[in-house]
Image 1 (cartoon, helix red, strand yellow):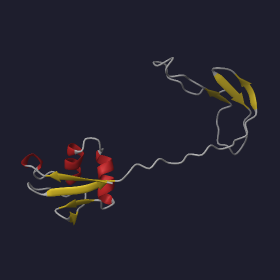
Image 2 (spheres, helix red, strand yellow):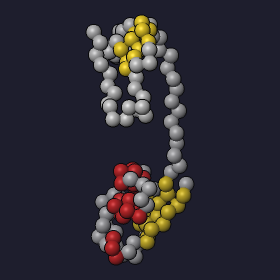
Image 3 (cartoon, rainbow, N blue to C red):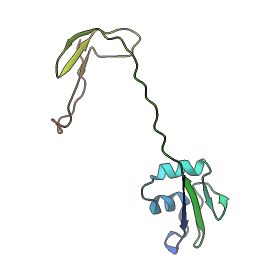
Image 4 (cartoon, one colour):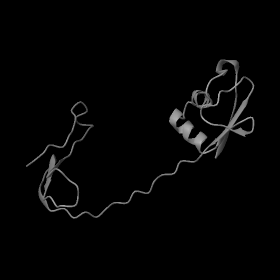
Length: 124
């Protein structure tokens, strides 16, 4: 974890601490900053603060950004009875319990057709 230190200047006088951090650390979104404040990772002059805390000139904000954790996504083995398949569509037999409303899944290459939206079409 990287420790980041911000010294509050007069331009941020009476601003919320989450707004100051989001402004100074422009790679972090304000919602992410609010999350690390909620997780008690942010201190102002050594005291843990809430997102609504108003900072004063000369105060020191210290926080650490947790390392990114990539979620492990596992493929599911879903048996599909494929009726028809080509480069544009896959038609499959509908099974109960899988939560599908469509019997056709339309595929789209957004690089080939960047201006056309690709939505599944109902096939009954």
